[in-house]
Length: 203
Length: 115
Image (cartoon, rainbow over all chains, first blue to last red; front, side, top):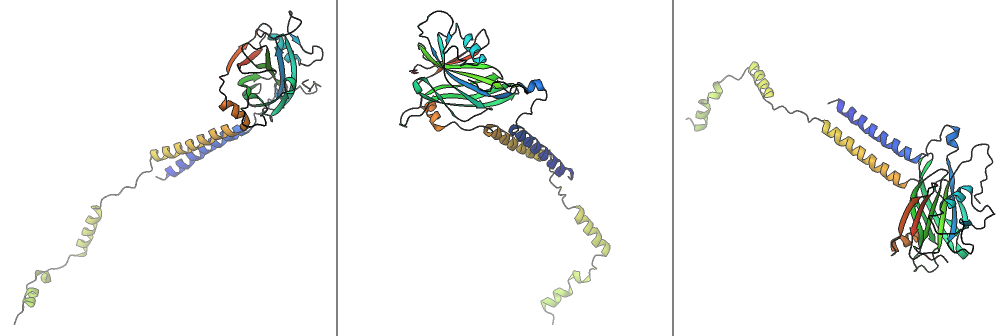
């Protein structure tokens, strides 16, 4: 009889301790990698570039053109991603419309300038699955709500995916027979290695 | 003259009996005590322990789940939800990977107007 209270107390304490440990683990960021190599692959943020894809180009033939072609408007990772689209998408030119940084896993809502000054609002929420893999749980691009609240807000892109640090993912939308498309280039940018003077400007 | 009361007292045998001895009292007390039904205390057995532990685990599980759902997240703006819930257009999304390794997530929106 005398041992049961002790057993109860120990059992409850153990269960409470496990629960508290789990909650604490959820609320604590993952421990930073110990090696220098792993540290260089940690996420710094996301580079978001809004691109207009257009299938109507006067200079037909040849590979897709980046417009403007000589101003380094795209990062090397974005340029490679757009080059990979050749043969899959019918667009002949890719014109950058706006670029923004999302520092860390989540950021505030961003406003991106679209075609002819059209304003779009962007938001994303991510979680870290491991030091080099992120889960984008929500990525959404929508038109800025009109002043007339009776009108529906048009959601242009709403998707989820996983992305490795350093990877560039193409997220786009178009009509099935549309000549133009809105494309988001999402790059999970790593923290530059210590001592390097990497270009922090995504543009 | 003898009345009925005095006659009954005179002939009552109890008045002539000798009371029980202390040994008899002791024997009687022991018999009474030994014949008392044994009331065993209810055992706080493994069932109660199991029920308590399960309850604590269930509460912990609920707290952990709640914390997972709430940590680091914020609700999207109501304006963004309007388009989701009220959209009558069924958006179709396709995913593929190019030979170069670039992954593409494409949404086909029949109502999209890119001016």
